[in-house]
Image 1 (spheres, rainbow, N blue to C red):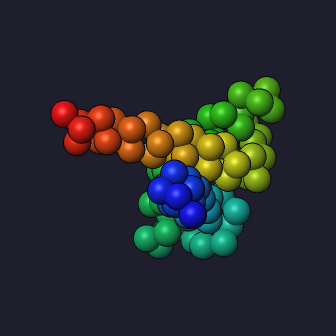
Image 2 (image 1 turned 90 degrees about the vertical axis):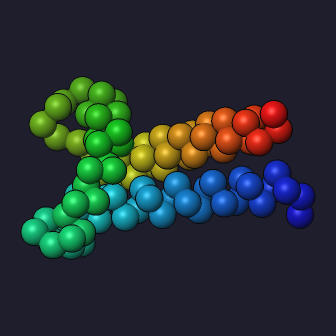
Image 3 (image 1 turned 180 degrees about the horizontal axis):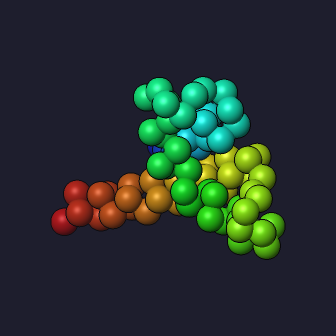
Length: 90
């Protein structure tokens, strides 16, 4: 396994963990009043994208929230990884 494969696995697993943890309050797997309720803050990109896809701002699909958050955070982590790598080379 090369370094690129390991990096892709790290990015995918980290963004997946963020996406799943952020969607726990939306999927009603934990209460909003506990510490878990604060993780919904990380779900806002997925919520907004899910609302845009469904066309209804009052109803969004929680499964789409997880998928969109996974993609969003994977791209955010990948871009930050590239920027850090660029600065380390200089």
